[in-house]
Length: 294
Image 1 (cartoon, rainbow, N blue to C red):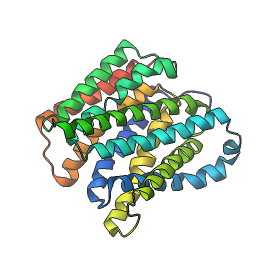
Image 2: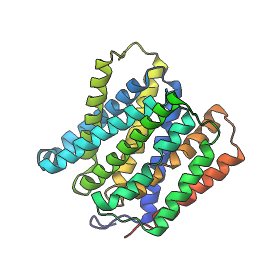
Image 3: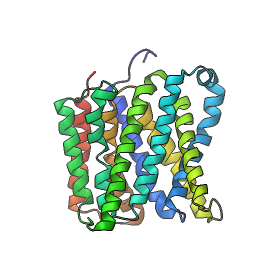
């Protein structure tokens, strides 16, 4: 394929599928990490930024030195929104049920599709909306059965909603700047910014940064190298070629991937509802891809 040609939809879907697998490991590694959730996010972004640093600084040094100020602001904003997404969503899990939190935070594709015409000028077709809706229904089917109510749950739900909005802004900021930046440069600055913010917050709150078990350190490494580098970076690669809305739809594959991995690794039950929901998610992603404008 010539360098000036855009990748095919098959290639883009394949990369997004890899991203789904990568990002789905987050909850699996979290099961092994005996550490505060904010610390897990800190090491996740820090390890990812450290991994990208030599690639960006050696092979993309000239690009880093020539980034326009406007583009740099967008990358910093993406990193800020990523950090806020992790902080608010993870905190919501302490106040409301996992199901409530997941359903709310996974509204990211809906918010992204609504705001894309205003921010990135990407318009969402009727077919893409159909795919978003079908995937969202599938995700609800998978997570149904553990919703919370009450004042405490309301706080958690609002935090999850904030996490959804910050996740939306993260994708939109990346969509604006990624067509003009290489993936190593973008991810190095973005993940590095998120790490700096999460680390500062952890220090202010007095959270422990060491003293963890070997299993926890391996979990940190897995989240940084698999969940973040493979998962998020696959999505960030796709942002150069397709709308933020389509990339956000792929996020709905995370509950499906996590369910499959939990069944494979922890022998958790794979119910009919989960199979039906998973089928709806995959079908919705494919439909959304078919509705993507050239």
